[in-house]
Every structure is written in structure tokens, then in C-alpha cells.
Image (cartoon, rainbow, N blue to C red; front, top):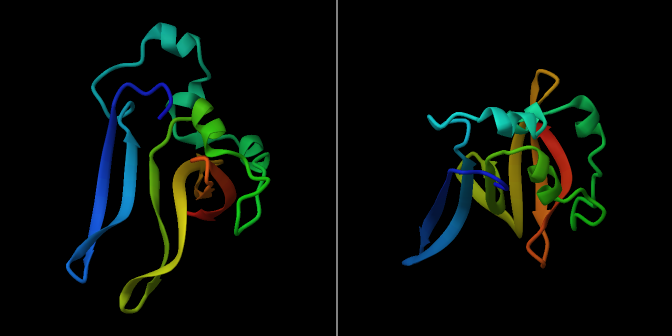
Length: 141
């Protein structure tokens, strides 16, 4: 993500009628998983929480929830990632049925999980035509 030194990017494809379709994209910030240490200077020049996958309760409550269908009015994902690194999963909206996964719509969603006050929340963002993702709500991890 922004300012990260090491990332892992993976694509998942699904075969349907002898064609392959992109199912999801995962972007993982490996900064905290690598053997590379955070320098003293890096820590002094940033908020400690930027190196953790956490949001304060106040930050979480201050997220602007956009329209659930369009995202209009929602906090941009890029604004959150500037301050708090995270792994992001981008995928086509789907629902889980007893027969497996089923595509619910052609909307593209980004999911980011943070710890908020001892609990884990998955923040949901919907893709915009300009490439940004806007916050539309959260669910417990």
C-alpha cells in the first residue's frame, strides 16, 4: 500500500465455459511480515498505529458511510491507507450459498480488515469509475 516496501499481489481466476475470468485480486502489505525492521527514524516520523492494522474507535466512528449502492459520500480507501497500512482484497460482489459462491452483481468491492477497540472489522468499499473505492459499511471479521 502507500509507503510500503514489500507487497504481495495475487490474482485468482475462475474457469467457466472454457474461459477464464478474474475472480479476485489480493494485495498484501508484507511490511510487518518481513524480516526488515522499522527504523527508529520511520517510527519517529509517523503515527505508531500506521505500522499496525488498527483504527482507533474515533477513527472508525468518523468514517463517512456512503450510499450502499454507489458509495457516494463515503470516505475514500486511499485516505485510510495513507495513515494505516493494510492488506486489501478486491473482488466482484458475491454471496455464499449452500452450493458454493454465486455472483451477486458486477460491482467491484474492496475489503480491508482492521482491529478496532479489541474487535476486528472488515471495512467494505465500492469501486468508482475513477479507480477510487468509497466506504459503504463494515462487518465483523
